Structures are given as C-alpha cells and as structure tokens.
Image 1 (cartoon, rainbow, N blue to C red):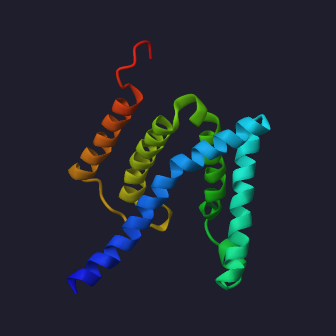
Image 2: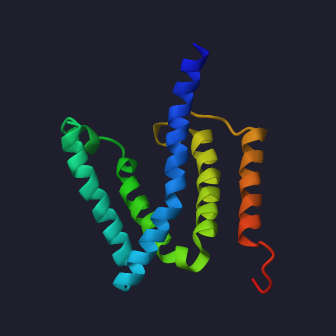
Length: 159
C-alpha cells in the first residue's frame, strides 16, 4: 500500500518536475527562432503554432470528446485568460531569454509564479479551494526570492 501511495504521489510530481525542466529548452528554442526570423513576436507565433499542430492530432489520436463550448461560453470571463497569459509568457520568454539568460529568466518566472500562486491559493481565486497563507508558504516564497538574487547577481562586477 505504501509503495502504491508513493507511486501515485510521484507520478504527478515527476511530470511537473519534467515540465519545469523542459522550460529552459523551450525559452531558448523560442529565442533562437525569434532571432532567426527577425523578431521575438515571430518566435512566439511559431511556438504557439507548433503547439497547436501537436495538440490537434493528439486530440484525435486519444479520442478526446468534442468540447462543451456552450458550457465554457456560459462560464466566467477568466476561463479564457489562459490563452492571453500564455501568449504574454511565450513572447516574454522569446524576447527576454537572450537578454537575461535562461537561468535568470526562469528563476524570475518561478518567483513570480510562486508569489502570485500563494495569493491565488489564499483567496481561492478562479474556482480553486482556498489554501491560507502560512508562515511556511511565506518562507518558501522568500527562499525563492533569495534564489532570484543569487542567480541574478552572482558576483558579476558592473551588473
């Protein structure tokens, strides 16, 4: 029973870790495409188009049921914000990774995500179950901010 519990807990954790580990590759690739095409917006568009070209056949291959568009259209306004935020993230990554470097960009993203996520959890925004801010969560957020400082300002003179 303990092994089954560990496996059930490890699989989502491992997948989330892998997704995070792939982000520096994504941002670096998007930056290179944007540079090759002459502008970060082109890199962002290529990234999002390739994402669509991967997802559409996947929907067909794994036989995902048709979307419940009427239900989604009747939902709250923020159901649609993911696409806007995704485009902002991809464009930011494409434009800023060459300037900041992959590590600095990603650690700043993680810090922003963590701080915002603590607030989203605390207030139970967007349909989530509220998870109150605790001293441990605040300490975790502060450690990530310390990580930003260490990665961003690693003893380079003149920076």
